[in-house]
Image (cartoon, rainbow, N blue to C red; front, side, top):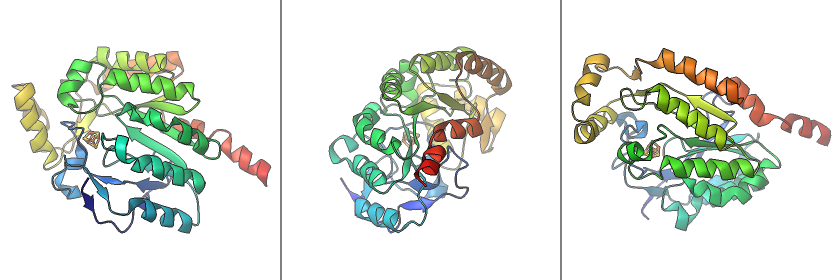
Length: 294
Ligand code: SF4
């Protein structure tokens, strides 16, 4: 696999703790080959050329080890924001797995966002981390329909595999849930789709679902997305252009209705959907344990 040079990898977030309790971000890979047609990370503002080609950051594990060792404060390290940490190359190369081992060794927590069931390979390490710090496993699901996913997320494992992974992670006692985002206007924003995701997430033992009923659209991301719409969903581009123009946030016209149905279903199943409540639940037990130690 090709490499790219890197100086720092584990960086403090702009608002520590605000997003799923994450204090630090960590991206070992550059680029992603899952091919999601809506991917925000291919936007021009991030400057990642040849985005679909996965490269690993040179010496990433040594850099991560040195950075963790030097941190004055431990915290939860998030991964999966700019590329999927469980891309197909990870099966052989195991950079994510080894980075998780480092998090465990240095007493950090982990919050992982992925579309791949390969995350279940690392249940053992995640269990070790969980014994000392919070672990959040976030499986992204935008549609419950494998056939539609094959067109909008062509190279990622299908949603059915993600639900099975969720089941295994939950059964292992890991705090697991769904990132229900984006929800693509006119493609995925039906009440049936949203409720089916909630139903299957519940069946898989999900503790939380965090939604965004719409998508973002920026330079380069928009051109790529519209190109794929023309290929797979002829005519849909015009609807987007008419409704959203050059807007960054493209909220589903049904967002209000979807939110009402979604929250009602989550409440009925006891699934958390509010960020503060999710963070509180993910940390349950840890503060007390530290107090006991002192
Ligand atoms: S998995 Fe995430 S980073 Fe990879 S292409 Fe899809 S949206 Fe982009």
